[in-house]
Figure 1 (cartoon, rainbow, N blue to C red):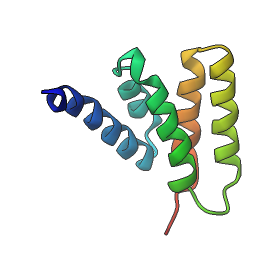
Figure 2: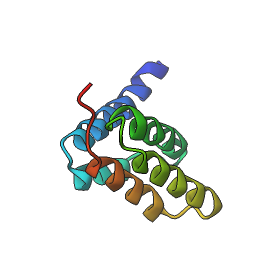
Figure 3: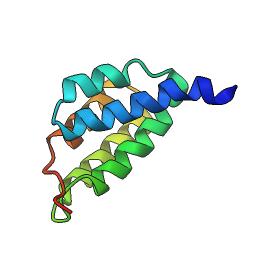
Figure 4: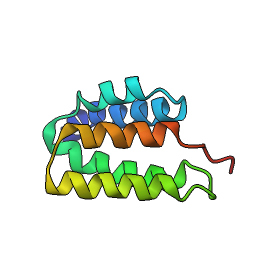
Length: 97
């Protein structure tokens, strides 16, 4: 029964990743805002992962910016830090690997 409850959240993550790949931060932020508050930590984990795996190997700024935004969010959990992290990953040069 737990799988049925997890599917919508998993689909949201897949759709957020698709929006980031399309360079559509508005859609990605809108989808992120639909997640329950207890899923924010997982979204941050995915954003930190995607800032490395979805960007060019030469791009060292994106992971650093996302990490700095996460550190700021950890100190003061404002939604703006999460939204900016999504925008940063969305606008980063995507990997061609």
